[in-house]
Length: 434
Image 1: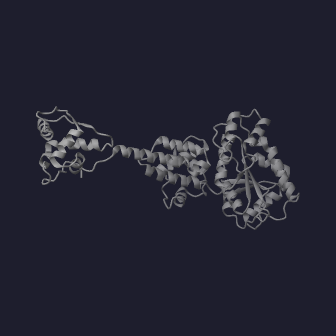
Image 2 (image 1 turned 90 degrees about the vertical axis):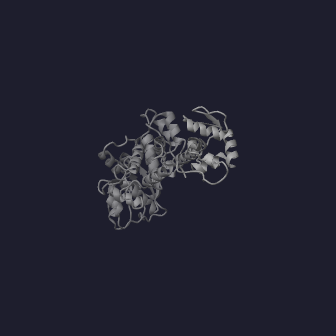
Image 3 (image 1 turned 135 degrees about the horizontal axis):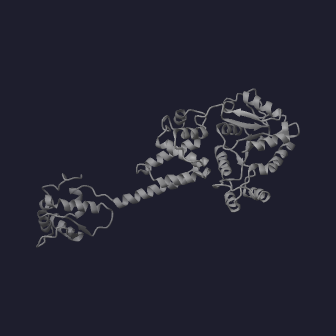
């Protein structure tokens, strides 16, 4: 019990009447504060005390004269006086009179440890480790500190943000529908202005290397880029050489274009509602994935209707691209991804490898060294973040300070594809994708 109403029982040990004199209240309150600090206490400074308070302190300590108005009293002297009067310790008397003692230093240490554990957890979270650019976002979260002074509340908020980031790109759902699906029915958790929305948008701005959105229009644009509130027609993905079996719309469109030696531009609607779609090739087909449409165009020009399955993300993959790649993998296809050797290209590659079962294709440090040897005068690579599939790669890129865009290594990629064509034969496989 705390406050001025707390008193030592009237009847009790000898000397209780002296200990509970109102004039000694400043002594007990000050002792309670000092002893609750969690730090060693050897003396306690009081005051300013008025004359009745000084007299009460003199009586307690057995002094032959009044102490100063701001006395500094040794704790050992107080212990002797209190024990002599009541048979109890100072701590026991203060606890009974004022309330339970705290441990502010211990609480600060506990909070410090709790916060350190929070930021370690965030930095080592699988979503952050899979996309190392998000470590910059994690660092900004740490710099901002815990929300509302609570590490527990902050961890809850960050857990929800990481759930959202793991589910992106979205499925062309309205934002409330997406939020309800991902966050256990909390349809308004990502509404504009909520702490969670701001946290996720800051992560997306870090991921795409753009300035944090300042207006409602910029925030909507960032959500759309992440596949939330996107529509089923504007989100598209380019494919070539894809011949799924089945009578579904996606299979018919992709196969017709492949047989004509053209790329198919599949919408998110095609991917979401593919109809009958079968990959029956044995062994499971390898679907190569590139970042730039020009590489797809070169492949179609060289191989025409014999082009092996090839998907183009056109830079950052949208919801149509990611869902198509996941669907192909679910049907047994092995995915191999290649992109630009620059800062953004590495981030895109990490994103694709995190969001799909794709494996890197000619994206190692050795591949970069070979490419930069042939193209040593490229532009600066921009901001470089770690490549999780090859920890040596970004160090080598930083050392050379040169970007190598995908088009410059297209010939090596086309040679790989030519090997696939040769294995399949000029007419292509008799079986179809399923």
